[in-house]
Amino acid sequence: MRAQDLEPTFISHAPGYWADEATEHWDDHRWQLRNRVDSLADLEQRLNLTDVERAGVLLAGNKLAMSITPHFFNLIDRDDPECPIRRQVIPRIEEGWNAPEEMADPCGEDSHMPVPGLVHRYPDRVLFLVTDRCASYCRYCTRSRVVSGVGEQHLETQWEPAFKYLEQHTEIRDVLLSGGDPLLFSDDKLDKILTRLRSIPHLQFIRIGSRIPIFLPQRITPELCAMLKKHHPLFISIHTNHPRELTAEVRVALERLADAGIPLGNQSVILRGVNDSVEVQKALVQKLLMCRVKPYYLYQCDLIHGSSHLRTPVAEGVAIIEGLRGHTTGYAIPQFVIDGPSGGGKIPINPNYVVDSASGRITLRNFEGDIFEYPDPTPMPATDMESLHQRAFSLSS
Ligand SMILES: *Cc1c(COP(=O)(O)O)cnc(C)c1O
Image (cartoon, rainbow, N blue to C red; front, side):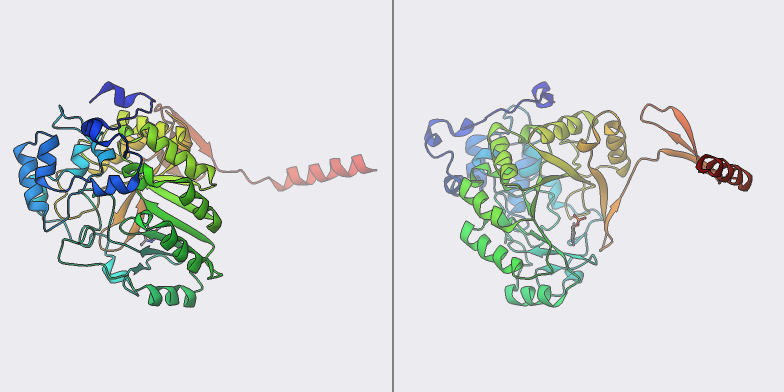
């Protein structure tokens, strides 16, 4: 691990591997998208690959495409084959192996879609999958069965039937736009979608799930923010896993969104060799607060095909939460969840601070391991009630 990753500093890595060829285009998000690293040849031109990675890239071609924006690529440490940025976006050979517990659709989304593209699992809210493309592809993507367009299954969002469903189901008060990454759409297209959703009176609250502020901070333009602002209350959930991802450019992008009045939350996935330690997680959540982002969920990695090399035992997630709670502010502490296999929804997993509970009292431990007893309320005896009435009466006369 690099010691500087744990420092609360925001470093610019631009243009790094691209050197002079890119300086004048660096801030243009279209240039970033056009120049994504998406082939073995591109990759080998810039980085010495290990055999495990080279095989991984070849195998990924008809599973989940590789694609890495120059901005994100620059965070890779070329001298570190175990680099935490590398493990998130460069395929490895282990991806080609499906462990027996793994699935193509680990959260059972396809069986909860009343309309293609709309996942309705919870009583009052829906997940609306609006695109199958992202700026870069996370190797552990829970939706890799449809995302990136190279696999057998394809996302076929049915726009009008989806809007009709939302109109007819007045119990839905909350829509979460995801995919894929909705912020890849043009300002105009997003504006049209948000305007359509805002024409449905019972939709109180709209959210966008996006890793664009991390993969492609150049996309967070003042124009985009001005458009989003028209559709409040609008929240954005970003996805950051490692403190190195919070660069100077990312911080500017997040501040722009926050200044547009958009509350920001972060979703992280615990990944082996990336962020499976208390010290990395603590550095991450504290930097997120500096960027005005509230850590929201910390996910156990879904049982997606080809993810066993990235998944950790559940007990490690519990230990991470224990290592944060009490040691840093509650604002920095995400809720650790497992998205229940085959459609259980998000289930919170917490360290146990209740050591014992008997009738009338519980025994607790605090973050330092000290033990406390907390009693239930004692009912007031009738005789005490009576004497207080008498005292009050004597005061009034
Ligand atoms: C995560 C998720 C949501 C949103 O859940 P919140 O707890 O409100 O963040 C909604 N629908 C589906 C299917 C989800 O997976």
